[in-house]
Image (cartoon, rainbow, N blue to C red; front, side, top):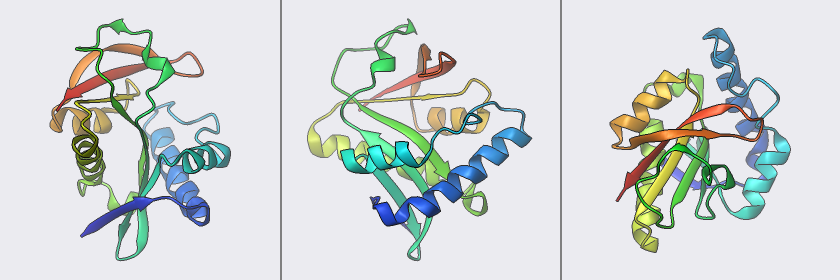
Length: 167
């Protein structure tokens, strides 16, 4: 059984280990996502300070990490395509799951947790993006019920597939 909680500074070393595993897996699959030193310790610290960083635990061991924010994403202002609405939304970023836990539904667990947060706050929309070659995440996103909306551009100018879910 999994639980989720806000991340703490003391969690950063384990979070970075999980991210490094994800980076290695992407590299092995020929996916250039997260191959430029991002996300790094500074990004995780910013997420923690903003109250947007979470870790997933199994038997008190951190097995995944993600960022969940209700502050929007400036990269989502420009989209080649169209969002389905202009409602306030939650954004989920930087989902990383320990290699030993892949395929066990943790990404869906994180998305379900974010949806529960939306319901508690009265937010009716969720958005997420992923790399064009990250087929596993695309499957998780679509399985969860998100709709493809178009292309957005992230901090380094590269394209990401953008998805939205109305709750």
